[in-house]
Length: 118
Figure (cartoon, one colour):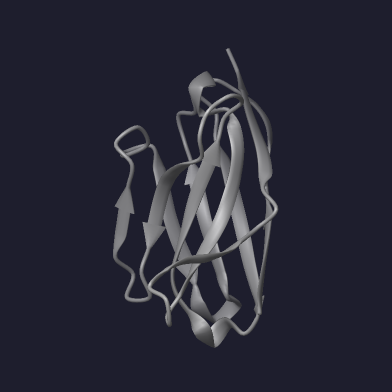
């Protein structure tokens, strides 16, 4: 099994920045890519960004140019640097990891709240 623990959420004013962290533990050898998702109140969970084992990154259009995903394989960690935050970025942010046997996201963190005030 794999456990993911996020940290770094909080309250920030519009235009500000936050950095989310996610640490993986357990059977991390099973992991392939990792990513971040978010869920705002009353909305479905949406994909935000992803990074492959090789370092390739992808972003949702709504965050491209403002958010940066990175990973430190030695620390089994993935990060999300969020700049120029907007009130519409307010959500619970979840770290997720792809199981290499499945090729899809299988492991999820508990989520961390990000609130952007106007």
